[in-house]
Image (cartoon, rainbow, N blue to C red; front, side, top):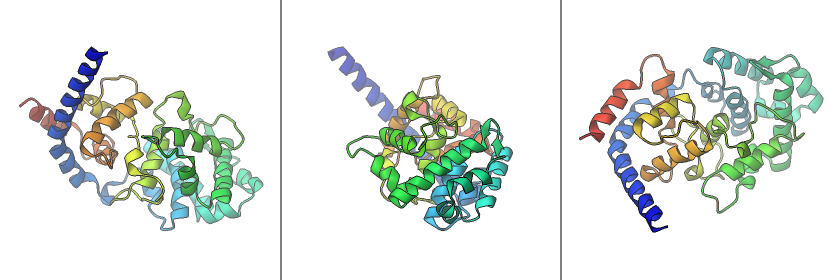
Length: 282
């Protein structure tokens, strides 16, 4: 037991040293890339066109749930759904279940179907009817003393799956996957800066987990924030714990800027990673 505690203390000290060495580089990257002008190409651009928080939370749920596959296809599928709805919150609140299912009967995004989209939207409608907003619903799902949003997210997804059916658009957090799209949605809704919308006031940014996609996973491994090969919930928690060392109130702060290095065609991660590696080796 003593050896294990000693090893943990050594690991934590080494991680703290690494993160404080990386912080100036991460802050410069944040200052350069965390701007609205660099959102495109990203599903978030389809959400940012709305001003009303209700429209944002409904559009955000749709956009994040469809954020898999080719970015051009993602944006086209999101546009198809949001063009049908026009004002997403008002449309959803007025619509009957039959209206929703009829509107998206022929919808398909890769291997997800109109039935899955309609199931999710019906669940969202029921939550808005019950709680007034999805944000209030999520806050009600959050255990007060939890360190992160994992349990709250699991309860929230269970409520959204009002019929209890499996739904690829709403992965089950209890299974230990990274649930990247759901964590992306929470980042958009909870954080507030030049990029993220901050529509929800009842959830602390300090409890968010980093959305781990292939870009974030690769960069985090190169920076020494994780050695895990699986992009799962444990890896997300490990990466988030590293960022909490330097940004305890906002551990997801650097997510957008870091992932630009893998997503945008006008830049790449190698110069940044080389700069960080050179500093760490001094």
